[in-house]
Amino acid sequence: MVAATLTLLCIAGALFAPWIAPQNPFDPASLNLNEAFHRPGSPGYPLGSDDQGRDLFSTILYGARISLGVGLASVLFALLLGVSLGLVSGYAGGRIDAFIMRVADVQLSFPAILIALLVDGVARVSLPGVVQGSIAIPVLILSIGVSGWVQYARTVRGLTLVEREKEYVQAARVIGRRPLAIMVAHVLPNVLGPVLVIATIHIATAIITEATLSFLGVGVPPTEPSLGTLIRVGNDFLFSGEWWIALFPGCALVILVLSINLLGDWLRDALNPKLR
Image (cartoon, rainbow, N blue to C red; front, side, top):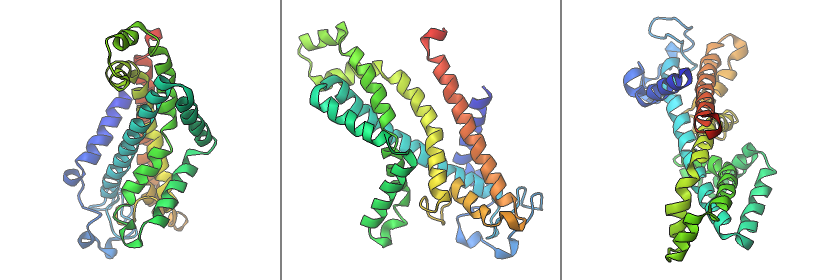
């Protein structure tokens, strides 16, 4: 319950940032370099200000919006891709199954962050420089999603191999239902339980991956910094005494990821019939 409460608070803070935040940190008109490096607790700056005079509390709220948005969108993309390939692989079998699983095995031999960096790098090289900033977030979603579809595909394939031999699937074949209709209408609803648990835990992993890419400078543009970008900016001033610029975004990231992970563990236990 504590994890669910923290998750809801984080989501609410991100969604209602325009109404909660004292300042829009991404509006260039609101920037004032004379207000830079205010320490935490200063008047008007409860968590201090960064090197550009932006209120750190406001940047964390707006940065959490980007981190959550990228995490949710990339998980949704990975879920759709992985579940589709897993259904086809488990139901069709044969060469199709072997091909999809060998591709999954090859991808599993590489770290997810390396796959995301590869996809992001290919997209940046192939796209014109004038549009890279405007589509940086969609490219980031694509790169994280492509790196995370395998676990969904393998889980759904294993469950589909079991479900396709059951009587209700054989009955659907007898009455003449097409394979696509059987997969979508009959098999899919019976394999979604574990997938939703994986998706909940994967959201935290996707947020960490986005933060890592942004920390390395290949994530969201500096004009719309996420929590990872804020940590990277604060890291440049960490040893000069402005510790709060990196500390508070880092704490926000830890609280967000930890609450989602604990919520995912609770869902896994709640949906496990062996524990009932």
